[in-house]
Length: 341
Image (cartoon, rainbow, N blue to C red; front, side, top):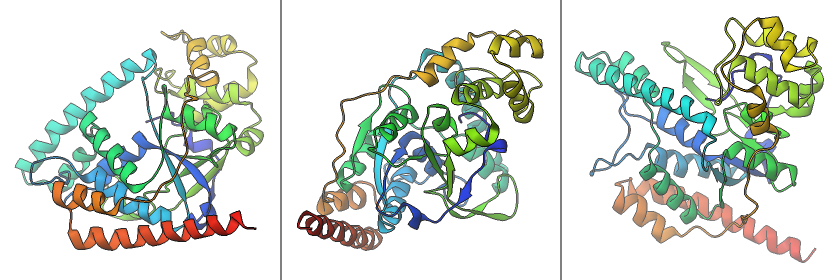
């Protein structure tokens, strides 16, 4: 979910061509949840194979990642590690909300209310260990690097961006900015026509680029104050301050020199230590033990995994593999040419 600061964030519309030749860090959990949310059957049910195993996330990974590769984008998939203890309460609340949504989804299906069923189905999305394992297997077979974060994936990506190993972070969440990622790219895997949530019309979802420094300068704050702003409106690690929206939060952090001053002005004593949350964002845990290495897709094993094991369409998988293999071969040729220049 992240922190809801999008209303004050400046962004620019881009095309996927902007990322041609760039290595970007994919917030893997965030992307998989996107696929589970939007890749569904007509009644909102998740796609599944003949054994009842969910395949919506695999469909998104295979077909949409190939689209990115065709645009020259080089994805590195970063998976979350152990979440900070402060996130446990948020996770429990999300679990409860998903269970409630799941019951409402099933009830709506029984009553033939397909529109409502789809709405509740999206809210009920749950990423399981089995899904994570199958996603990692497919990513490896496709030849893309996997980085296992110590804790938050966005923190790991921000660290790798700071080292110049990644061009930016691909995620829907704004947390990447709080963690210090210099560039955030949104709507990369889900661009195009999308049904507006809870509405009967479609909207254009276009790729976006958000620059951290440009936004901090424009808002007249530093990153620490951006973190304060996030704390005020709510993060994955704390509940929001009551009656404080994002614009009010911005005004408070602009005017106040310390968070204690903000607490006095809001007349709200939080049930958490804001310093702990500051520390999570300013000095997060990250892994230094990783390797960014791209390899040739294993065509036979991909076909076996998707077609034979998970009942994907053979023709569609083969057509997609033709595109993927061609692009990877072109990349290999270009790399060899550069070695002789």
